[in-house]
Length: 248
Image 1 (spheres, rainbow, N blue to C red):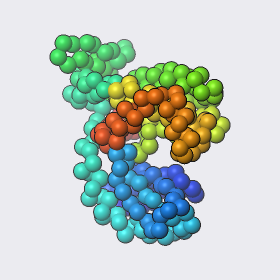
Image 2 (cartoon, helix red, strand yellow; image 1 turned 90 degrees about the vertical axis):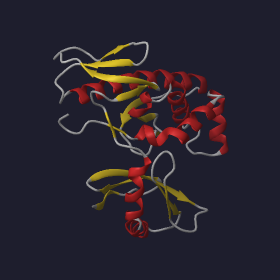
Image 3 (cartoon, one colour; image 1 turned 45 degrees about the horizontal axis):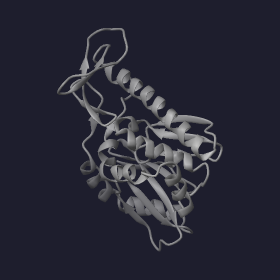
Image 4 (cartoon, rainbow, N blue to C red; image 1 turned 180 degrees about the vertical axis):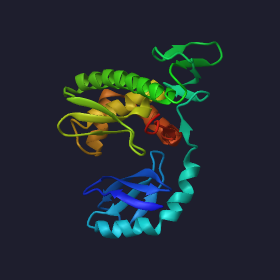
């Protein structure tokens, strides 16, 4: 099944449904583009459309290429779940998820010589949700700290930070000072999370991706290319981690 759930008015994203699963496609308006183009960069599906194109034509283009996209999405990365037995890369370091069987308590990180563990309490059906909530708390703490650090260096203020489960974006920033981050960043090495925080905070200075913007990112994070390169190489694998479904 392929259907549209939401359409953008400007550059942003559109959510479609493929095989009963929502898939977010980033949408980019381009002055240089002479035609529609659908691609699969590391960050996820990307639809590039000419600046003056009609959305109805873009929708028709996506419909014509639905089979192309559906055939390639499964190859991007294997679906990975937050459940007992999985090896979750907390801050880039693999951790084995272990269900404790205890009904109460918090998720605990247990360091081991070979493979560290994440001990998750609760019934088996509730463990994915408990682990997910714990990971979001960890992500919010790390992203809050790094956002504040870069905001201080750039002389701007971050009004609010929220976590999202976007399937193609690592973050977004509004002109009002609100930043959305992808919760999966807690699964990446810290320098990757730091890069995304620097990137989004820099948008409070330059709300674009011009050379001036990248100069601001480099100003607050001189080693920005390290995190950017990691996401290009491993972003698809990171996006394959899925949050629990309703009821789990």
